[in-house]
Amino acid sequence: MKKTCTEHKVYINAYSAISSIGDDISTMFKNAINEDSDFLTLDDSIVKGSSFYFGKIKTELPQIQDFKYNLRCNRILLHCYNQIKDKIDNAIKKYGKNRVGVVIGTTNSGVDEYALSGDIDHSQIGNPAGFLHKYLGLEGYFSGVSTACTSGIKAFSTAQKLLENNICDAVIAGAVDALCKMPVFGFHSLEVLSDKPCLPFSQNRNGINIGEGGALFLVEKEASLDSSISILGIGESSDAYHCATPDPEGVQAAKAMEEALHRSRLKSTDINYINLHGTATITNDLMEANAVYKIFKSNVPVSSTKSQTGHCLGAAAAVETALCCAMLDEKINKHNNLLPHKFDGEYDDRLPVLSLVKYGQTADNIKYVMNNAFGFGGSNAVMILAKAE
Image (cartoon, helix red, strand yellow):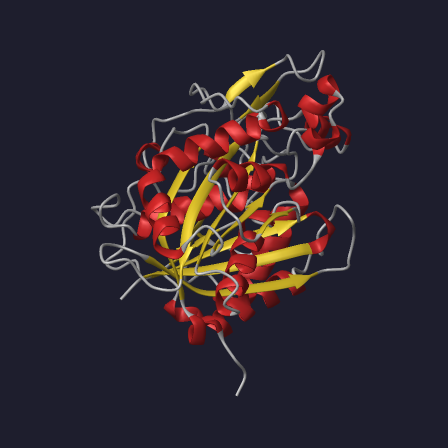
């Protein structure tokens, strides 16, 4: 019999996040379901002569004394750690410093700081993971993950393997990215930056709003006594289609969703909500609409939250995972709200019809939630979360 992730269930026992829509996950969720909220910022200081909308963190972040690690990415990460400090510290005391791992996804690390400092450590992908490992005085496994926009879910995939193979008893997993000139210039050269708040799946969509953010999770083999979120299954695939353009048919993206369902031992009809990758580029939304429709038709409520947070690049999937956890968390989501899809209401009729969540829409029961992430280079990752029983 093929081994599935349900044979080695792992649990999210604590989580935190920060983005343009709030400096903690409760605030983020509250703002995400509020139709009147708008947290994107028009900025003309990054690309000279042009104004674009960005998802900027406005919260004052903690300082880091160690020069090697004093990066905006790490300050975002430290902010997230401080929110769940007690639970992480208790896990370290419980398991020991050599049994708690760290896996952090990112794409930018400290590239902007490196341009000024010339310190090569500032540009290392593993810098955020190394920072948290050193800051907490840990002695076991740590690594950085960089697979473009799937980095956040790939961090969970690595964490799950570490727990399944008894390398760690707990893993501090997550992802972080700060606004950085290099990817902004790159997306500008591809002509996919939007000078308006982005409009995923609209016929008027014209590109992305880059954002910054971070999310951190304590993942363990056993559920906590209060509330936990189960990681039921993760599906991964690769397109091998094009370095920057997804396969329009979404064949491998659909396979990643099917693999996540298979590993979770669920049917497509079991899923109560899908958080779409939904970048608002012409090609991504076409691919994802085709992939989702292949499996779910128009039967599952879906939305993209990037029109509120911006596209947080390497942190995107982790930030969106935190929002999905909040949706499943009865302490935060007391009225069973689904995360709404914010756009101009003019759906692109060239795409298969998806069931986009409206503001104020609720569900009788939110039990199984899918989170999609699709990145440059054809990297696809999908994760299914559930309320822990």
